[in-house]
Image (cartoon, one colour):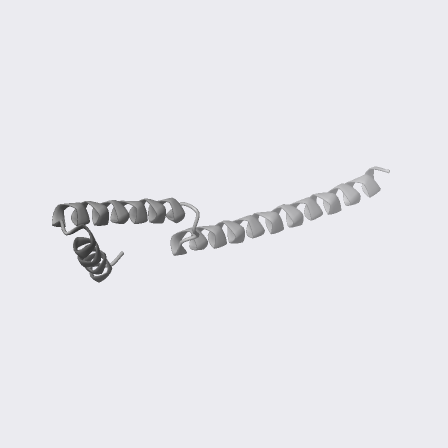
Length: 87
């Protein structure tokens, strides 16, 4: 919540309550609720750093998968050649 929005709410409530302390208290409570809701949403939202981390992990997993596939293919080729020589 911006300062301008808080000030407008304060002025409106001050006119309504005719008491600056009550208006100030209500504005502070509204700001606290807004901040709590924003903090709660931050844990759910995907931020840029999280996105970069996910992309890096996907890239690493892709490279590891390729290495495993090539390694197993080479081992199969070696076993085929050895089995032909033994038999």
